[in-house]
Amino acid sequence: MLHPEQEYGLSELALRLNVPLTTLHREVKRLETAGLVISRTLGRNRVLRAASDHPAAEPLARLLEVTFGPRVVVEEEFSSIGAEKVLIFGSWAARHAGQSGPPPHDVDVLVVGRVRRADVYDAADRAQHRIGLEVNPVIRTREQWEDRADFLISQIRESPFTTLIDNGGSNDGTVEVR
Image (cartoon, rainbow, N blue to C red; front, top):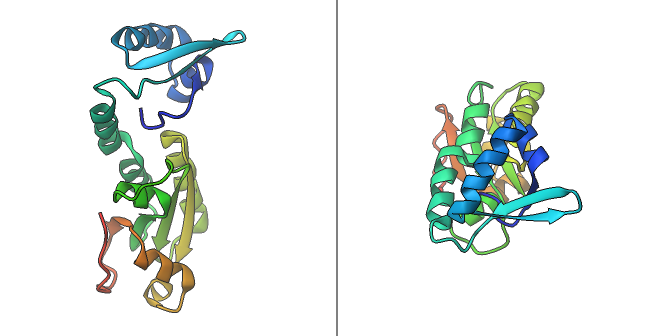
C-alpha cells in the first residue's frame, strides 16, 4: 500500500517479510478476497500490487505510513547514532508536505553532528531494508548546518523537510514544513 505502483513476487515478499511462503500465500488470498491486492501470473511467478482503487486504499496507506513509513522507520534506526539532528528532505519530504509529483523512489536523510560514518550507513541500510526505498544519508557538522553559504544546506532550508530528531543543537530560526 505504501508503494502502489510496484509489483512484488510472492517469493520476494516472503523473504522480505521473513515469513514462510505458505503463510504469505494464505494472507494474500485473504487480501485478494477483500479486494485490497491484485495478483497476476507472470511466467511461473505470481506478482502482486496494491489495489489503489479500493475505497480503503487511501486511508490504509495513510495508516501504514504513520505506523511503518519512512518517518517512523528512519527515526527509529537513526535514534542511536548520537546525532544532534536528523531530518528527511528531498522528494519524500516534498510529497509529505503536499507538493505534487511522482512517488519518491528514495528518502534523503540529513544527519547533523559528529557521528561515526559507519553508524550512519548502517542505520541507512537497516531503514532501507525495512521501508523498501533507498535511504541516502548526508552528514554535516553543526557548523556546516549553520553555514548559510553551504549550497546543500541552503537548498534544504528553502524546501520542505521533516525533523525527526533534534537533540538540542542551536535554534537557527528555520521554519520547518511538515
